[in-house]
Length: 453
Image (cartoon, rainbow, N blue to C red):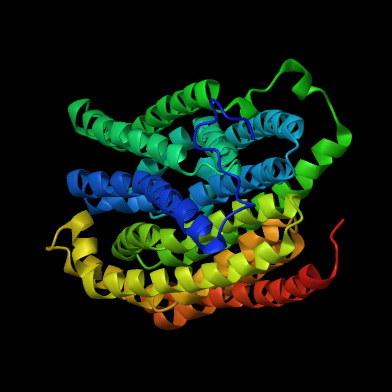
């Protein structure tokens, strides 16, 4: 390890696993919460200042954002696992070369996704049976988001690279700064400049651009491991395939899950604007509530990748056991918060007078909260397997989640209305957990007795 100018880079292959995972997770949790707060702030400001119809317009774009951005975020996370494995193996030339590949592949993907998204987003909204009264508002929001997708992808890529080297603190600081900029710009754009819904999207893109500049400055000054050189961009077929082998399945896995969300949104749109607004508000609260579980999972990906690179397989198993205890404990706490304070949280978006929206949103938070234990386990097993470079079963689990959401959209929404829609996430989590748990325990047995090549 180089001593000077390495910021908070952390070797996760030495030290007590529970302490390492917890202290890596806490800044990561804060960072993930800040990331979710982007959507939370969008929804809160739009709902309070532009009304329930505008809230429904922005809310119904959520699955389309997840469809494209989820692919990009999963893909970049997979690329950075290669970087973390090289760092764990103390191959610092490989770290720089991996970073160069991550940047090139992310830029290429962002261009493709932006062109496809901007070209087809209106047709996708129509195909989703978006209510006519909110179609134009939804399009004006999502087309700007898709047009600026490069900023989302670069932000995720740069912060993932820093985390792959064991630094979870500075990405959190950068995300917090970016959020503050976003909070400042959104009211100015929406109310002060009178831009309405498009102003919300534009403010987010501008904030992310400034956040990316901060990431580059930090890497330039404090993380020499990521100082890529011209020769690091030289073509290497095996290195390229290594990144694509992990990154693409992780991206497709997120997209598969997102397709299920799109299909569910179609069914939800048939229930009207009130249901759409309630689901959107509930989903924003839920998005922040699940961050502890997701953060522990992401921490396991970095922890596992470094220890796999260092061939310290016993530490991986020990880390998983201790992470399960911590993450499941957090899942109980956040579930209790959502169940008992769900109505008050929904009122933040629409006000106490929109009683049906509040009641629907509260129902959503109760049902999902009771299933957070399954989500905690799902994240740990999924990200641990991905940290080992295994992509098939996590992708299979994504297919199972897709099937469960389709089942809910086709049958349960028709039978039980909004209650049926609320069951989509819990059924998807439990369904996806089963293959992941089986795969992990089989892999754990091999880790104990077999040397991985």
